[in-house]
Image 1: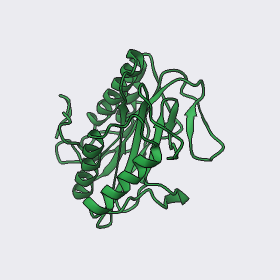
Image 2: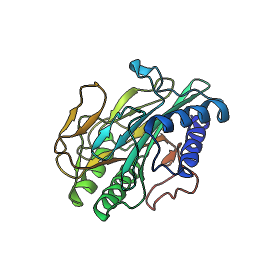
Image 3: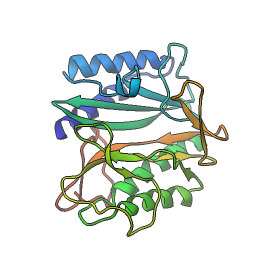
Image 4: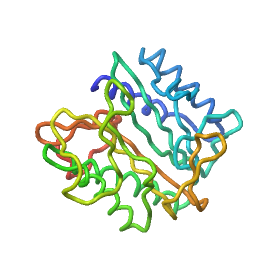
Length: 249
């Protein structure tokens, strides 16, 4: 899991260097596929999963998740775009996403992206042996609400390892002290989707693309983590990404 996470983190390091404005989401998909196969010598785990034909989800502005790459879907200056990628190496899968701020993005959108990332870290900070899954979800939901946003409840984090989706479900809301107990060695994703407006969502006719119910913006961040003897290890931590105070390793 560490190796898969390290390789997936390098995919995002590569993307961080790309001028995304003007690129189609299909071009980004193809670039990522080449990097995973040729540079990481790994498998893009999303391709073929549940019949999905691509290696990533590309979710722009009001798209919450599961955006489908397309040649006509162009990332433009002023957009926010979430890229959600999975990678399998030697039978183990890692999963991570990042919302990119492309060019001259307005202050309101930048704030949403910042708070979504903070909400993820608030959840990760709760991870340690003996903690409860409700502690993770409650921390995420509380931070989003305190900043005037809502958290999508239709999708959640999940256990991950030899399969992309394993038990347990890691909800992005909940009550402290409830839910399953975390144990050393567990690996799962923490992946809040934070909306400017309502938490309600709708799925487009393609059967994949999920959008906000009111057309307002959505942002998401995701890491794969492992419960350690004393806290948490972020397996998909990216180069130069700071771990906030309060996250115990």
